[in-house]
Length: 564
Image (cartoon, rainbow, N blue to C red; front, top):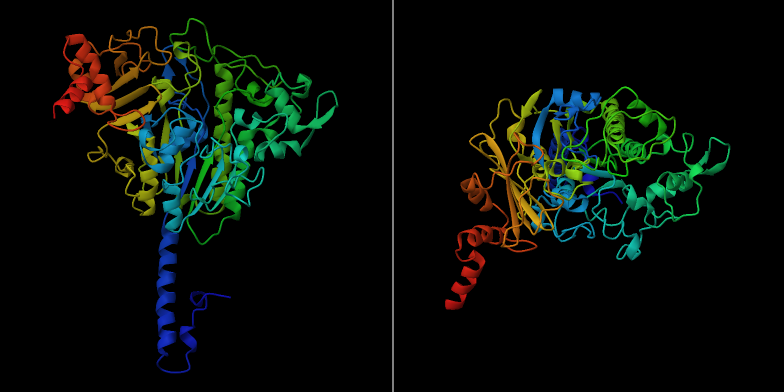
């Protein structure tokens, strides 16, 4: 039946001058519950628009040494005008699952339990989603959150421990991660992992959609999708991929935006909401519809990459063909970004239609960048600026309009920022901080963290402002992954170090480590002292030890321990 708290006695219909003790106690409980509900409703809604693999300088506000980036991103620009834009936002790790795990946990990369993409988020670690949920928020997620990436949304383990989970429902670990509701799916390439059969929400939806090719052949949107992604191992005709079968109606980013709108429409209206929209694009492959390709073709010139003799991911002018475009080039990347900008509007329009825009904090950022051919590199997973830095914009109530913050910040701190807006304290093990100080007029961030860290596999790095200069110190075990052509050699200690003036050298081409050894030593002390591979401070200090002939610090500590 109904809880006593849901059967509040009427104050205006008591039959006696004084209520009975039972009625009086019920009135007290009902009043307290009503006040808590009212307080919860006054909290701001929180919306996170989160494309995958969006590098910092392709945000509509930058030009490159090789030319202007002629992006048209009106919604992103409008949000920046309404709020605060950060020019140096660094991810905790430049890879999908580790970066998202760090955000969810509010912890640095070395302490998330997700060192790479082959891992699910560990359920022993609380998420900021769960804290918001416990505080009365209706927490929602859609798209590729990658928090169960290792098990492919539970599919590869047949949803171990979840008796109610089924193919395509996205429910595996959803509640345990702290979500009230969700429509979860796999990312671009992951959708095809079990082709020719689909296994997750998006692929199964495509399989149930009929399309007709330009030549009049009937097929499924799933088969057309496979053909466009050029799955050569599958016996499917490439002709299934054309302007009629591969349209925005069936594009995965559009599917994600539609799901975001659906979640907003079915949410309870008596609670504030949090919604994380994890768009699969512009993650490669850079496959775009005919209309997307046409929109960036013929007249716009896309700048070439830096330090790229092999012309990987070329720029230049793209030609309109009237067909889907499958090449890995810069104009297709731009087409994805401009399309995403229009999808932001779809989600924001729904928030506006519900009368919630003035009470909604909107954040736009990404999990990591994309090298786009710089240094001949593809994808991410590297310590270079195109890989580790992303756009970041915050707008909404309590946020100053039109402010640009140029100091280094951590996207990890979005967890702490959302909790701060909600009036919720982080869990004890969380190290996330709040950016709200930097969202105030003219704020200098005097109490915000003094440095930002990032890392993956064989490298760790620190970025810190010193006397107005943003220095990035990188230490790699062995050679740094796909380094610039000007990078130093690996030292005799087996490590490579670099020091970069980020603002003067955004392409990591001029190593300053030999010119400024005092800065190197200062930043080296800020590397992780524990985690997946122990102390990076000691490891990287071996470079100095080998070069000046002194004892390796790690060896010295071992010798001292033996003496003791």
